Image (tube, rainbow, N blue to C red):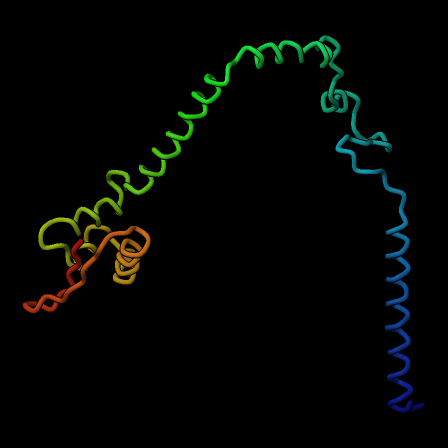
Amino acid sequence: MFESRAAHTGRWTAHICGALAALLLVGVAYAAANLPALTGRIVDQANIIPAETRNAIEPKPVEDAKPLAEAKPAAETKKAGKSKAAKSAKATPKAKAAKGKKAAAGTPREGTHKAQVIAMLQRKGGATLEAIMEATGWQKHTVRGFISILGSKGGMKIASTRRESDGARVYEA
């Protein structure tokens, strides 16, 4: 009537081992399923997709297109007609455009918070922490972090002083 604890534990262990074996067999059977290869095409071996939908989805063969061999000579004649001077002149404006983008990347757009703060820092007497907070709507830690980035990554020399009259923090560029 009463089982020992060891017999009870052994029965549960047998149940768990049986369940794990069943899961293993199901996994092996699932892995051995005969699935079609993934080709990017729609495969409907069960004929679930209606014919109209299948025709709309499947690509149509193009019969009017020129063979690839006929298209190449036209491209080769265009390449052969260019001189080396024309090729080098074409490459030069691209390099200049890239330099122009780099130069423009350092200047902030008008009306942004960055432009406002830089303008405030560059005026005579600089700007206080509170004035920058009021103009941008930022919190103190955001203003301090932004000013540190201007100094390190922006390349600006920022001087931070404490005003003796009211003890306010003043930043100047």
